[in-house]
Structure formats: structure tokens, C-alpha cells
Image (cartoon, rainbow, N blue to C red; front, side, top):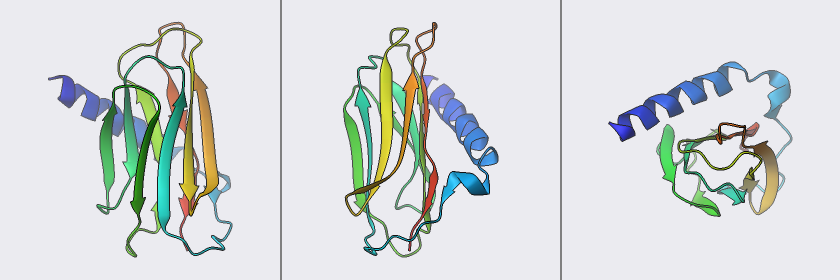
Length: 134
């Protein structure tokens, strides 16, 4: 049941992120290195668990449970992957005021970053910009 609720929560969060994405939210600067090495990373002192929804190499979004920070996911994007984006939501509460930062790297260069602070409920939300791969 917990996994079903987490999946539903993550799916809803992803819909909000993608619907709220405007042209200004997309980093269309060229990836000069041509690298397809991708890394998502979350750091900070947030003590709750999180659900990450991220574009990965499976041509779809993947829902990933994060038990503790720091966390990272690395892969080399295959040619069919054109855009990358990630979002994270607290699935169990941390402590109000705790922070976390979600970063996306392409070819070792940071291309997007988003920081969040846990609310009085202890939950946190992190997003970053969509990035178009070369």
C-alpha cells in the first residue's frame, strides 16, 4: 500500500512539474561537450525519506525511493533520450527547516539546481529545470 501511495504521489508531483514548465524553465543552452553522462544528486540535512521522479535511460520517468542523503544516480543517456529532468518530494517527514538541494549534471557540468526547505509539517519539495540534450 505504501508503494502504491508513493507512486501516486510521485505521479501527481510529476504532472504538476511538467504542466508548470514554461519555455523559460527549459535550459536550451547547447551542451558544448556533447556528453551524455548524466548525474542527479541530492545533498543536504533533510532526514525524511524522499521519492524522486526522474527521466532515466528507460525512455520514461522512473520513481525512486531515497532512504537517506546524500543520494545520486548516474547513467549515460542513450540517443533516444532528448530531455532530462528530476523532481523530489518528501515521502516521510523530516524536521521543519531542514534543507536539501537537487542538482543535475551533464558531462560533469552542473546544468540545473533546486533547493528546498522542509515546511512546518516536515515535508520538502525539490525541482529543477528541464534540460535538452544535444
